[in-house]
Image 1 (cartoon, rainbow, N blue to C red):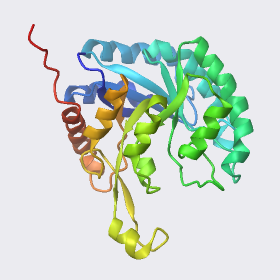
Image 2 (tube, helix red, strand yellow):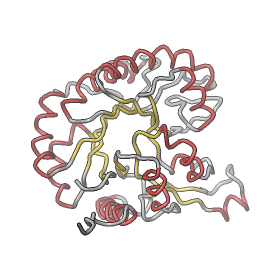
Image 3 (cartoon, rainbow, N blue to C red):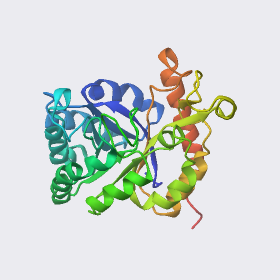
Length: 295
């Protein structure tokens, strides 16, 4: 591949061997494989072998393995989440990936600062495990409906929490899985934020948002009407040429993987229509196809 930033999409890991061959012809260049709370009984070495046979043939890559659960509690449906992080870190190389990502977890119902000691304990150890295996850890910046004061899933909402997290676990292989959408739902401007934090961005999710500023100005954010919607790139408010420019200026050579299944319009039977539009839009924001200079 003759460009530094690949454009791909998220695929549920248990379905990846079935789904990836169907969507590869559309031009996806990378795939972020996702697990919800646990890797379950999926045979990771066999899955890696099956998927690599397809992706290697087409020049695509597996960018990241993601575990979305609460590794700090070990409670309920997240009982296997911490062990799943360990398994993902141990097997990432088989997929050709060097990133494992997901939620930090948090102590349910507690302020973010109360979760930092447990975060340091869990991810200090995971960071060392990952470092030994050449793996980077990247935290999704989704609030999952939580606030600073309370929540169930994640503390990596924004800069104030990031400062505390990276102070607690200062390892260089610990960073962010960033997207503008999760900042925009909190009415944060993602562009200046990315300029400041790009050195900690290891992986980018392709998800945007549309903010209804007329609703915000008239009714605020606690009124009866929605004021923001998650969007597939190309349908939201963000200029992704700006995002890719900032990433390139700082030497980012990772991927932008489209996180679908959220758009209020391009959903259902229009899901892949929206995703392929996003794929082509992001490729254009990247500068289009690579053109070699004359010798």
